[in-house]
Image 1: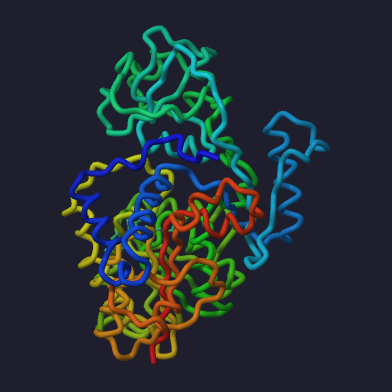
Image 2: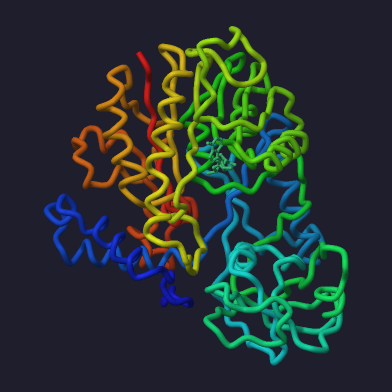
Length: 463
Ligand code: SAM
């Protein structure tokens, strides 16, 4: 089966060349040979522009048993699909053999969808959300037909390079078709209103990739989260009563998971540098009925202070204040899927390593002896992943790598001088390794482990 309906991810040539040098580094070439390394790299570029073949939601197992949530979700989604609840057969919702709080829903796609003559153009981010099951929200629309009225059937295109002028009536630049929908607003209310537009602008009826929309569905019981992100929470392994720090927390998906794993007993401190993102953390915590989360707007590179009072409520905190620390670092994000392209320069891609190291230094200081530090990113470079681990082990003799539970991804990638034993302790989710096979009949839970976003997890113990 031909999986590629979209061209490979579009990157600046300097970025493509850089990534190629990463995926075809000397250690990799010596281990698998040039042909295999090149083939993996090409598959990476192709799979990144496509969505994973299933949707993962984390279930609020602190509020109800998984099976009860699974049944409620099936009922809700059947309603959404306009079916009566008895007809649940078409809607598969699976549990995961190793992860006790996730539900997996297969994505149906790419499907054959006939384009129509009325065209709506949306921003690339909005286009990617549509490919993962969302409707088109009005602020995402950049162009629409001149006389578009609510009720019109339209074809939706993603503007891959951000070149379409807002308010245009047509656009012929680089674009990708993501499906058909029904306009919910007239053109005039989209572009001629004084107030910022809100709400659904186009309701998707024939998306290229069909996946349920989770907007407003069982808000306290299910939380849309990529599988590797859920794994990161389990790897951190927080326990009830502990004091846990999430250094880069917004919008709070992992923060909330941590609180759930602690049965909402103890304290989860969530920091983020961007003020309006703090509200998102608090909204999510409230929706999931979690009380143990305290969120603050703060630059985490400065979160440690020798003068801070012991047990301080607000940041900064004295050294050795936390039992566990999660550093889900700001990163170049090149593992995100679907991502049809980015106009980032090589300089921008490479700008994260120093910031991650500053955050890491603060993390090590804030962690108690005997405590656990988890470092994670959603990117694919060595510089932000394995090289950071090698640097951390050199810089902080008190740190050692620990086995991860569960470990369902691949091991770390060669190229940063780590030993085979060290690489085995790392967890890297590598969708490129199974990209050809994802269309096959492999059971969904196996496919789900491999056909993920690109993600990296390292677990350290401080002694
Ligand atoms: N952990 C989050 C989750 O699972 O929902 C995602 C975190 S995202 C990868 C990284 C976050 O780090 C962004 O929200 C960004 O605002 C924040 N950030 C970047 N630099 C920071 C800093 N110096 N201190 C605190 N937060 C920072």
